[in-house]
Picture (tube, rainbow, N blue to C red):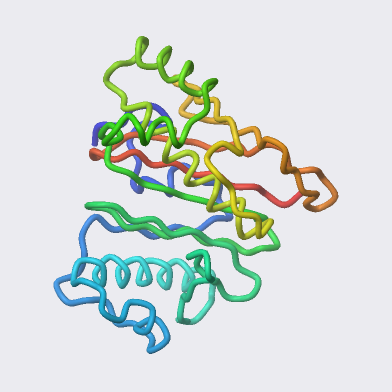
Length: 233
């Protein structure tokens, strides 16, 4: 398995980026038959195309597999009006899917306050206008420097994935919708880590003002994978 940064050879991609209290499940293929869904989940994808139904069902199957390892029986994983998955009481979690990859990560809320994962194809963002929309000038300068150092890495896509994982951790914790310019990300190219500084929105969580997120990244199997987690004190 070719891996750039983050870790050496991993038995799982997203699992290699997260601390022990967090349970992950992943797959690189959808099953031949669609994964069974709860009736309430079926309603969420009424009229969806076959490909969307497969990725939805496989993600839910990964989530139930991870929850089972926490000792939680199978439940419907629904979503709120902003599309965030709704987890059983006492659980935090995150889902991600892209072409050729589905994954779920869950943990006890007593151990982990927030959790976000994302996976993207290791390919450049499709249009320069997308890069302008998802970054701020400080980050674009950083991307230019990173690309000069390591042109083999699609840093624009990596930065996008980092922001997606931050949003997935941030939103369930704060119920505040983030824009792409609400954080500034610093990617560390050699350690496979990143730091996100929140701009202007710093709620107090567990008695501590939340101003930064730390996470890890890797590139393997043609994918960019990112993960951010906030442990309980």
